Image 1 (spheres, one colour):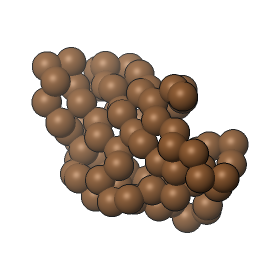
Image 2: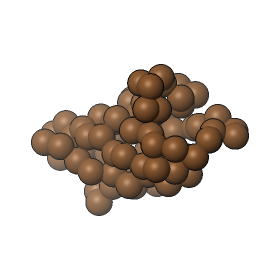
Image 3: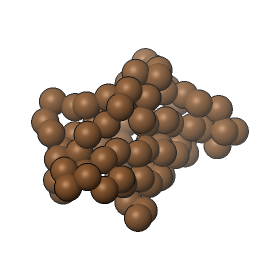
Length: 83
C-alpha cells in the first residue's frame, strides 16, 4: 500500500480478509521499501474475488491513520483512509 506521506507501521498492522471474514494474509505486514509504503504478503495462488484490507499506521506528524480498502482482485488494492 502506498500513502501520500511517510508512515510508521508495526508488524501485523495490515490484515486482509475474504468475504467469509477469514484472514488470508500471511501475517507478516510491515514497512515497505519506501517510507510511504506498507507491505503485506498474500499466499501464492490466492483466488480472484473480493477482499478487504484493514490497516493502521502513524503519520510523519504523529497522528494515527487507519482505514479499510476493498478489492476484487488478490493482486491490487486501492487504499482509502479514515480519520
